[in-house]
Amino acid sequence: MNKIYGIVLCAFWVGAVQSATINWGTGVDVATVSDVITSDTLVEAFNAGASGVADQTVNGVLFTGTGSLLPSNTGADGFTGDTGNASYNVLLSNIDFGGGIDETISVGGGNLAAGGSYLIQVWFVDTRYIRDQYFGDGDADQSNDVHLNCKPGQYAIGTFTADGTGYQDLEIRSGNSNHGNVHITAYQIRTASSVPEPTLSTATNRVSAPFVVNIEFSEAITGLEESDFAVSNGAVAASSLSGSGNAFSVEITPAVNGSIRVELPAGSVSDTDGDNNTNPASDALSVFYIAPGGDQPSVVLSTASTNVIGTFAVDVVFDEPVTGLILDDFVVENGMVSNLTGSGSAYTVLVIPDVEDLVSVSLPEGVVTDLDGDGLWNTASETLAVTSRPIDVPSATLYGNLSTDGSEYSLYVSFSEAVSGLTADDFIVVNGEVTSIRQQGRRYSLSGYYYSSNAQYYAVSITGASPGTVEVTLPAGAVVDIDGDGLTNTGSNTLSFECTGDFGEQWVVDGGDRLYGRPSHGSHVRAAVLPAAA
Image (tube, rainbow, N blue to C red; front, top):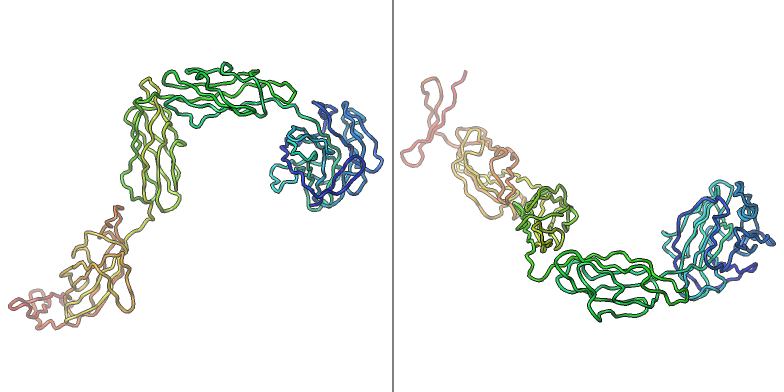
């Protein structure tokens, strides 16, 4: 960014930066001579153009002709409209440009008083296509810069407080990358009369004792008295007013439970800068008072479970009927609220977690009031903490065969999380049956596979019914997790192995079925019936 200082037909470089903030209004299309503001006192006004460009007086304001604002020292680009005033038309037809796409000129001529309030009005007109400009104050944050359109031409008015150097930066930026130089048509600076605007504030708007009101004016004032304040449902405490310059405070004594209103009427004070301007009326400050010992409504937040998946409901129960509860009253970390329902003393609100983690919900003090006539607001709730977890359906994996003694086999069931309800009848076994289940409570490995310690493990004994393939499956819905979700398992893999045990002699029974059997456990015979061949 280059910096150019234009002072009445001469330009020079200065290293210092004058960067008081300019607060801009919006761009306005040029229209009539009344565009040119005439309030208060003129500091300077320039008609930008080539060397020797003529002065122009518009609406009583003398715009001095200069070709020194920007380096190219040239230009008239022909304003094509008609403002109804010849001098204004000529002013808008002149233009100065140059120096690249970002230039800063110094304005004010060293005549800006430190702390003084000023108005700056700039014009930009260019009849060519896409020659828009941005005007700012040279600050790195350009979000407050004003955008002026080239056609039909526009002006903007900004305000600033002089920083003590006597100058003010005016930055000009091209609005299009194809536009190689910045442009300006004219500008003027005028003093801005200020009035001492009051702002009333308190540390809190809910009190249970006398409280302090802070009064800050936009400039130093004189003449403030305790009797100036207008107070409803209370009074200014005697001899409590203190302060000087632009900052004061006063103590207010409440009368009865309820809303207290404090105002400073217009004309209560005057400024001290010689203008003798008086203040406008302040905004009304509202504070709610509850005497100590007042029976405030209390509230309890609860959920069906503090370990949830997805959106969950929070019950909001007050100890008496209340009014005024809205969604924005709730304070939620890691989530948002929706669907508030209820009335009186009982409400429900849905909480939608942002991420699967801890969610906290609370209701601050003072968001609702009771309905019994004393107008007391609620006390704060305790914080409700809820853990939001992902949907974690337990899965089951069957693995084995770890040991065999012929017709009896062992396999293991690994769940992805702790479960309950597993029984022998849950398994689907082809050519065999489950004879025992034992919860292991520790990890097992098989062929290099390790199962994480957060799972639950079972050892299952299978007895084959006859020689051949035995297949074992655990279907979906057999067990339920124990973390409170109530989620059941997905179906497991099917584990197959060959039964090679000695089943002893074969008998043929009625109907042609074959019976295999062998002695087991003393005098008992374990047998299996197979259908006869067709």
